Length: 153
View 1 (cartoon, one colour):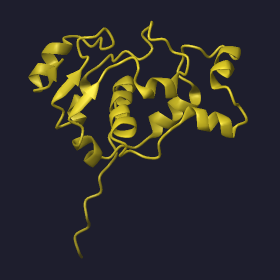
View 2 (tube, one colour; view 1 turned 45 degrees about the vertical axis):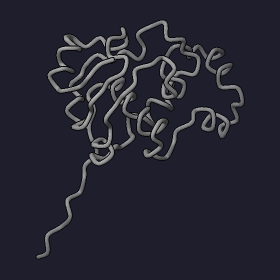
View 3 (spheres, one colour; view 1 turned 90 degrees about the horizontal axis):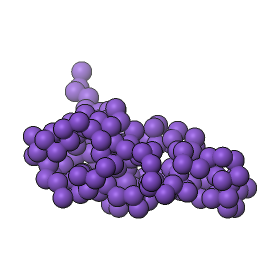
């Protein structure tokens, strides 16, 4: 019997908001994770032309839209792509946040990272920009990042 090639299993994230930071890097910054998700295109295909009005009219403001949550939760990210992540950016202006909550204003904890347990999925992470912001609320965040060899700015 011939040896079978190793099959990379998709990573399982514990913290959805941490996963969003990784998707931001791979999908919207580096453009290596596809298909690229667009809430505007998805809603337009459903006959909704003005996503922001739809969100307000249906009392969906300041929540992660179900369509976005489902897509991003089910999105498989290979170990190979995760190994290429050397830097993450925590910024209220990240594209991923618009794709999840088109009217989010950054004034609440909707996208706060609660846990850094998923650092183990990023073996080559060297820098986390914005780690000292209030959007990462994990206990001992700076100490944990330093212990993993991740610089913070």
